[in-house]
Amino acid sequence: MANTQAIAKTLRVDLLDGLHAFGPSVIRAGTTADSFNMALYLDTATLDANTTAYTATGELAATGGYTAGGKTVANATAPANTGGTGIVAFWTPSAAVSWTSFTSSGSFDACLLYNNTSAGKNAVAVFTFGAQSVTAGTFNINMPTNDLATGLIRIS
Amino acid sequence: MLIETKKGMIDSALLDVRDIVTTEDNARVISTEWSLNGDLVRRDVSVNILRGLELCNSINEDINNG
Image (cartoon, rainbow over all chains, first blue to last red; front, side, top):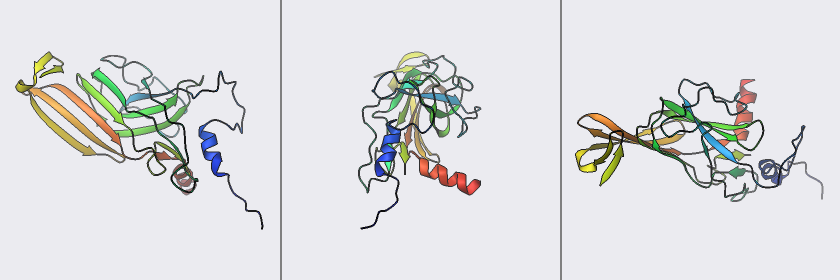
C-alpha cells in the first residue's frame, strides 16, 4: 500500500471555517462564526476581483430605506462538503437578503459580500444581476441551493 | 388590497401591474412594476442567484489569463 499525495478533502471546509492561517493571522474575539453583510453598488461603481474590502465608494446612498454597509446575511448553516466525494466545500446564507420600503438612490447592479466582523471588512465576493432600480418597494436577493453544484461560495 | 407606493397606500384595483422577467449571466430577475395613470409608483425586484462562485474557477481563469 503506497501513499498518495493529495490535498485533504477537509482543507476546503477548514478554510471556510477559518481553521488555518498560512499567513499572519488575527486575534479572534471568539469562536463563533463571523458576521457577513451584503452591500449594494451603483452600476457606475467598479467592483471586481480586485476589491479587497467593503467600500462606501459607489455604494447606494443611505436614503430611501438603505443603510450604509448593507444588510447582515443569515448564517445558520455551517460550511459543508457533503453530497459528493467531499472535494467541494460550499457555504450559502441561510435566507434571502431583503430591503423593504426601499427606494434606491440610483441604478445598481451588484452586491458585495464582505466580512463585517473582521477589522478590515474583507471582501468575499461580488455578485452582479444587471442594472436595477427599486421604487417604494422590496428588493430581494434569493440564494441558490446550498449544495456542491450551486452553493454561493464554493471551493473545489 | 392596499399597496404601499411612493404616493402612499393605494388600492391595488387602481393600479396597473406588470411583471418583467430577465435573465442575467448568473441571475434570474423578476421585476414588478405598479403604475397609476401611467406613473410608476412602485417597483419591486427579486434577484434569484442561480449559482454561486467557485474558487477553483477563479484559479483556472487566473492561469489562463496569466
